[in-house]
Length: 525
Ligand SMILES: [Zn+2]
Image 1 (cartoon, rainbow, N blue to C red):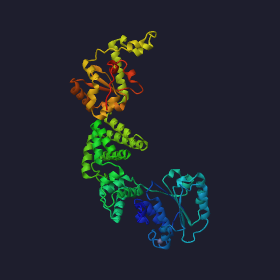
Image 2: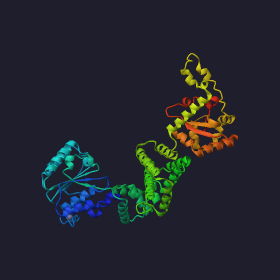
Image 3: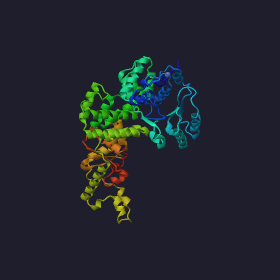
Image 4: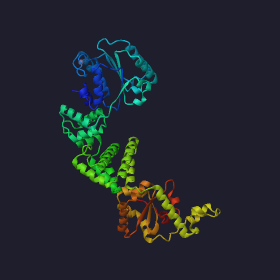
């Protein structure tokens, strides 16, 4: 036996089965009852909201021999002909593939003939915004003087693409996105009919993921059910099939961001990637999670609006206390922007990581860093006087004839550089040997220099590296390794090279330890 997709099997064939468009259904039924039927209708709205279904039921109702309360009886010859697709009175046209002038001219010729049986010829033109300008003009001529036995129903997801001349001749109906509650109720109804065993939480998640489209909801349910035929379909199964993530993970991720724990955050992302979770979906769900937090923060009585269990609600309330409104709104903005970016991105993981790291390190501003560096450089120059100006500057000065490289090639140890820092630099490879792999990756690209007050300066080539290496925990980790491996207490300082500048240029006045000690500072994997 072949399997029929749910959305085909349960396509509504009477007005009562259409969910979430009550106002539209009521108006159309009233028109049928009062026999005040228009000649041109425009149905607009997002996909899967019931436009074509309503159009077909309406077409059936206007031709029905015994309509009851504006609804088609479903039993007369006319109703059965429409239901089986055999009726000559209901003509469906997909404008996406029939968008030329000739297609519309054909309709105009047909329209001249009265229906052989029944009262109305109903033309349903789907995706009508796809018609060419010529086709619209041809259609307009028919709409201007429609025979009394013709009804046009134009359906579109993009009403703004329809010429005003056409719009002005149609009764317009805007189909709303269907609410989560309505979709859930419909899904539950169908699950009962199919005698499936589906966890309620799973149904709610599918309804939410469908984003207002009943057709998408049915397709998603189909997709999930196909994976677990004969088994109880649980929330976890649905998450797995859709590549989505449980809310517990968002809670964890958020707490890690609030704690500014870059290391943990990156680890969590790693786990999610390993589990094959879809990162665009993750960003979108996370935005939704943050929105719930904002609602909880706004008012304590949001239980019925929020789609969460009681234990999750307690957690949300706790997290809402951890953040102020401005930060929360900023987070929501950041993640909704990220959701859009991820749709078209190839390096989804990197984008997600960078975003999370930025949230962890709000103070990490390129410009501020650069400014501090300049002040430090000026201070140093003032301390040491003009002769100590870097070789680079001198080359542009009056000594053009002399060989400035000769001096630069023999760097001296700065007096400030302690033996300890030197030892650390020389043994850096050993020191970082046991450091966590992620941190090691970033250290690999960094260079070492002498910092103020006998500190070891680690200079990263980019913001990402500096923000990862520069967290409190990571600095502590490196310092602990120094202590353990060579028994010295050396403080470290992390900076990044200013955008567009080379390490050598920016730190020309600080000595580059790497050149100084004539050794390659490498970090093994
Ligand atoms: Zn009928």
